[in-house]
Length: 294
Image (cartoon, rainbow, N blue to C red):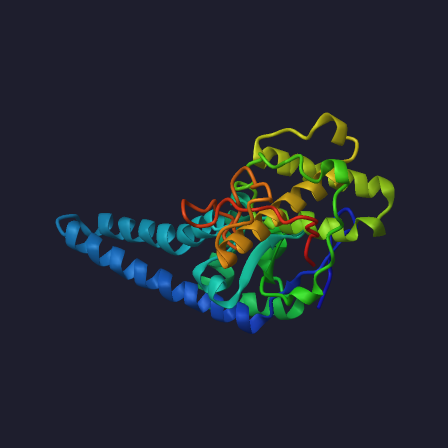
């Protein structure tokens, strides 16, 4: 497994996707996009039969750009790097630092992908992926992204250190549903590697990640933790894992013990990150002496 290194010298345990799985994922995406394109074109031909040839040609070009280029960009942006093909093979597009991609990353990847995949039938993309040490095509190089495997054995992950006792249960009311999976990944990987960094670099990266998490949750970092952003991150991750554990316990064993206080705030699912609805185990018991799993 290759290790990715962020700008703050943090090693991330991410596995770059290999060319065969990426090619099959792209093939699935292209097949779906072509089918949608054909359906849209047939509908337009039937609806615009009264137009002249020039107008129909302009509409066809616009539909081509909208479906085969704009469609993948929109899907990649809204799904945070997972298209239908990537979802089928357990792949995801992330930034070089392990964070989630945004519209500008998807725009660059999609614009260059039109040249290196559609116009050259994937030859340029395959050559670039074979030459690159991390299997990146030209779109990934210019966008600063990387396609990684999400389905990594749990035993390979590092252990997230527990938060200080005084910060362990301070964020029970915090809404964590808007924090994307890519940001959780970056926080978790930082916490497992922070003791290997120089203090100044570690504090700088923790401050940046804490600001990102606070912006997603809508609550500022507490004043007493602003000088200790790593403790804030550890407490928030601990809270998320505690909610997941409580949800599993409530779903697998029926009602939670009455002696254990319930968890306040929305519970975040282990995969989707969505707030479960009524009857889905959104609230449950916080296990006593819970330790973050590996």
